Length: 230
Image 1: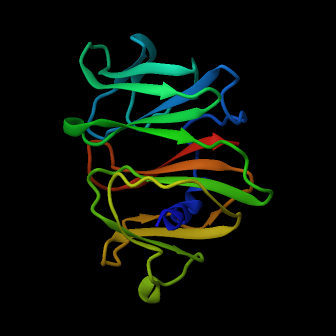
Image 2 (image 1 turned 45 degrees about the vertical axis):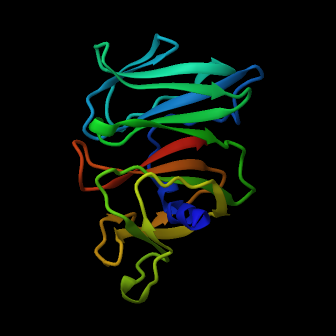
């Protein structure tokens, strides 16, 4: 299941990255790196505090920070409604020396929660890409994922993955660069709700792709793609 979910979003690597590229593999010795993603569709803009010090201000929905350098060890991350002391996420995260992390504010505002991921920013083999996928659209039902050659008719296609639920997170996987088309449908119904179109994948990229709601919640659904490396 994990490998198939990652294969699903290979096409997403060709989309515009949501944050700046970074050529470093991991944080320097004695330090870790963490980036923050606002993926709660009906939450307001937010401020992000690390150990009670503001590091990001007035962050809008679907914005992602660059990697922030932090000392290794335990740190407290707070997410506040922008310009207020109202904390919606309060999480302690133990950061390992030389490791990169992604912290996602996820879910609808009433049940917003952090997803903390360890990133693997080592380069893929020559000619390959490396991709990780997250179902981060809280209003979306369970879905089926089709990964095909561009323009293939879905009538006789079998989904690469069925019944993918909100909150599912895959590992990274390597795959050859090339042309793909990814289509997402509600489970058991071949009505496309996300269509990547024809996408050409360049080698050497590492990406995290997150399925997300539209602003305010609900459809139309889309993919938010983060540039982990290159």
